[in-house]
Every structure is written in C-alpha cells, then in structure tokens.
Image (cartoon, rainbow, N blue to C red):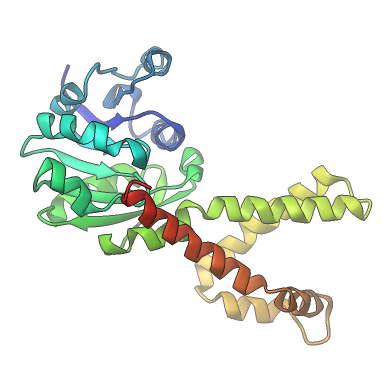
Length: 268
C-alpha cells in the first residue's frame, strides 16, 4: 500500500491527538494517515477507522514521505535502527519525542531530512500549537510540506531545533499548567460556596477570551494593566500572588521541565 500523506510510528496520546485533529479538520482523510504501533488493539482500532495499518517501520516508511516518530524518548533506541533500515532519500522524519536531539537521532540513522516537533494535546480540537525545528540537510521546501500538514490542526511556529528542550515548557507541557490553575480556581470557588462546575465553565471561557486578547495585542503586561487598577481587587490578588512567589514558581517549573527533557535525551 502506498500513497499515504503522513505516517505515525507510535499511536499513543499525542499521536492520537494529532491524528484526530487532522481528520477532524476535514482536510486529511483517514486513508492518508498511516499507523504503525506495537499494540495490536491500537492498530485494529485505527484500521477500523479507515487508517492504513502497517506491520513494520520500514513498511510505513516506504508508503509515507512524512513519518512522525511518536514514541517515548526511552524507546527511541529500539526503533531508530528500524527507521534507518526503511529510510529513503525522499523521507522526511519528524520526531515528537521530548528532549531527543537531532544529534542523537542522526547518530543512529545517519544524515537525513529531519524536523523536531513539539505539539500539545489541544491539537485534537484543532486549537493546538506545534513548534518545529528544521535540521540540516532538511530543505525549506520540505519544512513547508510538514507545516502544511500540521497546520490543519494547529498554529505552527518555527524555532531553532537546538531550543526544542526549552520550548517544551512553553507549549508542550503548558496545558497541564493551565489545567492545574483552573483546578485550583474551581476548588477555591467551591470552598466559597460557588458551584464548582459553574466556576470552571466561567474560568474556561475567560481563559479562551484572554488568550484571544493576548494573540491580538501581543502584550500581556499591557493587558494586565487594563484589568489591575491601582487599589482594586485584581491588584490585591496580584500582590498576594507576587508575595507567594507566583513568577518564581512558574519559572522554576519551566526550568525543571527543560532539565528533565535534557535528561531524557541521555536515557535517564
């Protein structure tokens, strides 16, 4: 079977989110997204959904020009020799394995067209964000091919591939930061007698609107100033958060996120 637009080696959470986002966009049919996974039940589920299922990595690489390596960083050593076996001059590899560097991949498969990617789970709704880093000798044209595919389910931004560990805290892990904040706000509201579901819905809609305002203005600090009038309730809240180290806590979390990514590249 040939002719797939894109193939996924590994069909876990992030791969599933990307696949559902692409298909949900209506721009890429299931028949154009191939799957290769070690779990038979997962392969069967995708096959029933109309996705071509491949029994080996070389087979999916023969059928797909763009091949996404969507396995855990700890499993890269197991699959890279098989990737090398199926590699062709037309293959564009895209790795979404957190922390795994281009050097580590190319040390096994050899020089190849390679793009490092950091997606997030909101791609499932077509509302995600994907950072891409082009690695030599990947051409600008090949990068545009990958951008076109991923843009069906996400905002796509290009960064230097060397900064991929640092970008994880920005758009890869950050949904969990937002979920944690929402959970805290909803539970605090419940402790004050507000229905938790009502509070969560109000907060989520506020997040959506606030994000849109930031995208339009590009200036979060100016938007804060619009809400936090001197001597008001918002300023009181921000002062308390500053006193408890809100900024420092977030920065520390981001730094540890980056450090952990670099450890994963070392197989730790």
